[in-house]
Length: 451
Image (cartoon, rainbow, N blue to C red; front, side, top):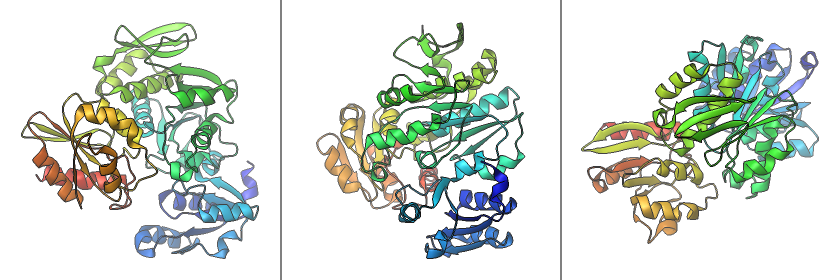
């Protein structure tokens, strides 16, 4: 993209949260005529409105008026789905629609490591950042993880590494976005309501992460994942796999309880898998992907080992909250799909009291049935999907419905006995009761700490 062409170009930005405001400011700094539109109320967007007013950027809230289509380019924030009416209407009018990720990449001078997948994105991106930090390599961690890429991209140069967590919504609207290293962790059912309940469409969206990669770029992917294996055959980049189930000539695998890598014919023992601080099969996969990325970026094995031994994971992802009366409480609020819950349950051997439910995204709970029967002594069904949860697991586990998170935590406490685990792993979005999954996790933690 020739960024000089942005001068005086009419651009509409959809979404006035963190990323929307950041990309509007970025485009305004390049001389574009920017208009920001968000259907949320002014009350919810007070800080955003203040920032837009201070930058003298035109905006509207509470609606998407016809003014949004008076543009040559539409930029959508990460939270805006491809099937949003405003996006569909723009496309109908032949307006080019791109994501905030795409726009930011036009200005990026540093190599990009981009991570996507249905599960594990935040943990893997954070872990790669920690690996680079320990190795004293200049980097930023941004994207869908908290810091908008557009807010920091102009500060980067060729000596930095941009580590980006990337969602399928962002990838739906890329044009030339090209990571030096792309990571595809897994592809399991998620956001089915936004992809016409089609796994083919959802998988194709994830596969766009390597769409523009060339032979001198690298794709790191999960060789044990069915859908990931289906799509990587399209890649033009160098393919480096990771697997728990098989040994690989090129990639990361487990041998004699050790995480081992083989790159360019050089085999390296990284760490005893039992010494990796973050537990669970899913975190072993995340650690493999991060270790490969670290090695490809020049990080030595001893440095990788040190980080893997000490990295405690991320907030709201199997986060230990407290132990009370020999019952351990865990916050896994970021588990917004069924597959995330499947991995979370695998991480424990103790009996589990599971808090499950929220705003359902087209979930099929059947995959959890055997695991729930084996490990979950009781389910506390929460949120809009409580009835669906109750119906799905009737006869599999004891089920109690709760009308609030406060009631859910109190109920879980009464059901748990010494040696049990109380686990918030909802498999659903949080927007029925909360602003987002972070808010849900924070409320849960506060209630647990006050028990």
